Structures are given as structure tokens and as C-alpha cells.
Image (cartoon, rainbow, N blue to C red; front, side, top):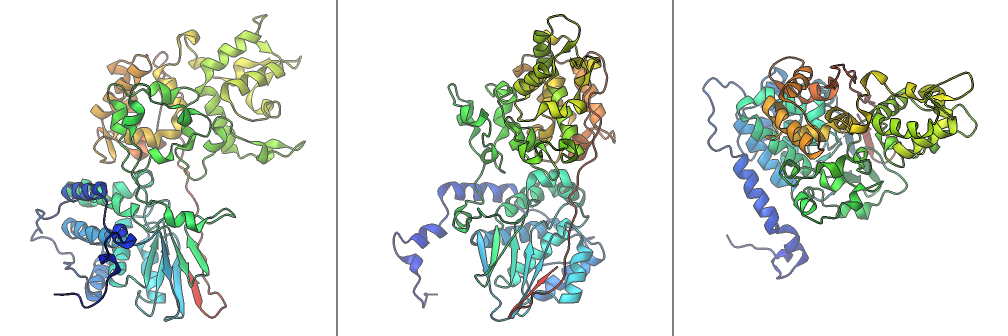
Length: 536
């Protein structure tokens, strides 16, 4: 049928034309994703009793989905993949910042973190009504993780966008991210619900999340964005971010003569290399030089920033000065978690620290001056910390006020100080970055590490740091991590129950640490203005 309207994208060389035509790389990515997540050959079993959906969606179909989800039914994998492909095509056309209006409805409802708790969503819909042209909504990120029904919440929100694209808005939160999903439960939920087709569903969810808009502006006055704003928030910059940009090309870094200096200097920005799509497998191939990443200048602490994590303070050059009041009680301000992480970092560098301490211990009596101890700590750890103030928390002193330096490290696990760090110490030095290491080992992105994957990664790591590790040591490490003894290491086991066993003594170096969780804050009410903004 011939178009009866003028379309500016028809003009040759039109900026709009080029904006809506995907690049060749994007076309190739789309083709590969469609192949990997193809649902055409998936059949609907006769035993399936859940909702059946067709496209374009209707409100009646979405209501049936709601009723099915209330009774605990799971949408069939074929329909789930089909729905995800539909919303992906829709999201790809959306800008980074959505524009919402209350000119028609005279009100809009903003919902905060749902985190997989579908009963909360149903309560909102019960009290406030379903989304419609007269009842617009903004869902401000963190729809998934933690709760048991993240899949169903995401599918319902995506369905309402397809139904009401001008009335329903989704912002991306920090939990709409593959690494966070590995840690906080969404991947495990998908694996348990879709089993045979889980890999396809996980891969497509990961891509869909990367296309979600970043923020929404209401009536050109109110900015809604997950995580808050600062006085440096730049909307122009936000509008132009390539929110779906894949990770950096590691192959360029692994070529002979590659310049790592910008990444390895303090403050080096690794974030661009760690987005979904970054090919970490190159690091595990011959030529992937782990030693560059593991040396003291390799700034891994910037990679991951989970809630309640003090790792930014422990990066080379980390500035503690803002936390410390001059002349005051520093330790009353610094949280215990920061002291704990600082102790971990000290132990992780015990070999180098002991070498420095021994240089100053000319009498070989196990003591040095406070100033010498502070100089060693500052030089090895490269942290801007008033070490003298922290002395009482980190080390013991004798009656003459001299530091007994061996008390700030664990003597029971110090072996062969001059032989260099062991494989255990190397892994421990990077314990705050286990998310990254987990993703490297998990080659098939299944959310679990097989025993073979774990063993292969350990052997390659040992080879690149010129250390050695036996098959028995690998098995011991794997068994200590596989807490439920199912033969696989999931992310919670890897992160929360990680035990490092010293190959010399067999003693546990690091106790498991309970996972930190961010508290959820919900506020209800309406703004007193011409338009109502409901905060849920």
C-alpha cells in the first residue's frame, strides 16, 4: 500500500534515516542473537496449561497472564522468547531519555524497586488500577532479582509497554544487568523455570535489559532516574550515551606491544571493557597475559561496585581523607566493613609487606618504629590512609611503642616469603572481584561453573603467574566452594562461601562472608501540584 504521508526519513542522507537504520555491526549482532534465541522449533506441549498469547497483544491476553501468574503458572518458553523479541524491537527505537506527559491523564504513578515481588505489583494494580491511556505509569528500575517472580514481573511490564507505549515507561536500574543477575538470583530463577531453554531466555533477557531507557522526564520538569542525580548530572551527555554499546575488544589489548598503561594506572577505567558482550574468553587463550592484571598497578577495584562495598577506598590512591575528621576519632566514622576489607587487603599482600618490614628490622627482633611501619603500609598498599591513627586496630606494639609487625598478618599462612605469591594468594588478592572471575570461568553463561571449567581456569591462571597447582589442589578448592555438592558451582556458592585453602597447610584463609543487601525504601503519597505524581 502506498504511503499517503511525507516521511522525512525518506530523504537521502537524512540524519533520521541514518539514525533508524542499524549499522552493519548491529545487523550482524541482531542476526546472531536471533539465531541463538530462535523459538520457531520450540513446541507447546499438550500438558501446558498456562496462558497462550498472540501478537499484537491485547489487554485481555495480558489479564490472562496476570491471573495465571497469581496461581504460580509459568509462561511457556516459546511465548517468553517471542515476547522478549517483540519488546526488544520496541526498545531499540526508544531514546535514552523518555518523555512522559500528564496533559491527558492529569496524573502519573511512579513505582520503585519491585525486585521480583509480584504481590507488590498486584497490590499496586489493585489499589491504583492497571496501566491504561488514562492511568500512566513509570517503573523506575530494579524489577528483578531477590524476589521469586522476577521473570513474571518483567514479562508483565514488557507486555504493558507493548499495549501502551505512550503511557508506560521503564527505566533501567542497576539490577537490570547480567552480573547483578548472577549474584542476586534472577539467573537462577530463569534456570529453574525454563531448564532446557534457559540459556536462550537468559541471553535474550540480558540483551533486552541493555536496551532499556535510562531515565524519564515528566512534563519537561521532573527527572526520574534510578540511583539519583548529582550537581554534575548532564542530560545532554545522558541522551547521547550508547546504552547498548558492547564491551571493548580485548584482542587489541592482547596483541604484542599493546599499551595497558592507561588501564593499569590508578583510576584506570575498566568499565567500558566489562559491559555485556565483552569477550573474556580471549584472556584464557595463549597470549592472554594475566600477570598484567594481577600486578599491584592493575586497578581491579573499579570493576564492580556492589552495595555496601568499600572497595573504592581500597583502590591504589584511594582517598580516605573525607571519612576522617582531623584530630577526631577516625575509627568511629569508618564502618567496620571497611576495616574488615582493609584487613583482607593487608593479608592479601602479606608477602610483599613482610619483605618491606624485614628491610627495616635491622636487629631482627620482630619490631620496627611506627613511622617505618606506616611507610611500609603506604608504599605497598598505595592507600592514602593515616596509618598511625589506624595502628591500634591493625597491629600490636610492645612496651617501647615499637610495632610488632608480624601481628598485622596471619603468621600461620605465611610460607616461602621469597618465592613469590602462590595461586591462593593471587586469587585472594582479587577477592572483591569474584563477579568478574566467575564470568570468565562460566564459559557457557549458564550461571554455573562446572568442575572442568573451574579446573581449566585455575590451570591457565597458574600458568600465567608462573605458579603451580596440582589437580588435587584444584579438586579441594572446587569441593570447598560447591556447598550443596551437586557438582556445579553457582554464583552464590562462589561469592558467599568462597574458601581459599593454602596448598602448604590446608588451612582456610578466608571465612565466608554473608552477602550484603541493600534495604528497600518505599514511599507513598502525591505531590500537591496541578498534576499528581504517585510515588509507590
